[in-house]
Image (cartoon, rainbow, N blue to C red):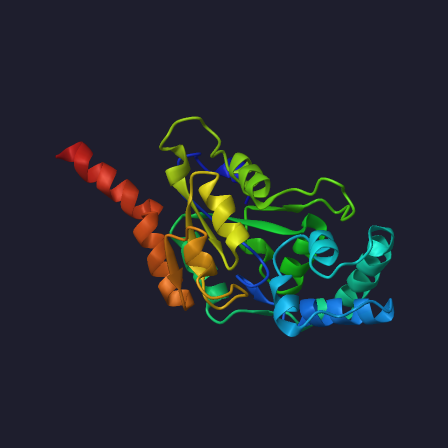
Length: 249
């Protein structure tokens, strides 16, 4: 089903991918470690490697791991080759998430992915994990990972909202969606687009990272996430029922 099949007023839930929907199971940090080792570059400590999950890979490799600009393309290519060959298959959907997506769709929510993973790779991962059909739109970074001006999470979220028809200037328009993620970038992307951000504690955020970045609530399970979404964004069926009751009052 495409976004065009929905009325623009229908509420939408946007999700980050790695660390939110899917557990990379060490594929990202392990892949970065192997790519750096293969190119005889220094390997950061584990805590630093975990902090590299979420932002664009080129940005993390350059700013965090200190990969020289003239070697960035080669390191990324090595990492992506291994990720497609082994890492993607190792990734697992977090407990309860697949069932949650099914229930959200049954209740009439539109669903989108807004990730800083390259959009082509994100679609491949969603397909490999059996989640792709749950989503109306998928937005990510450019597939050209050496783009000198990579898309920010704010712009990716904005693009997903536009595809969902939630791009009007009205002050209340953004209340038709929420953003779910595991890193500060997700919460900032939500806030800068006028959305409430829901943080998930099972991802890669550091202590207080999500709260300090403006999360409206931080949840620890798929069940808690479902309740938080309903609290912040009433299910479409309930909205329709209430409107019908008011019309006959």
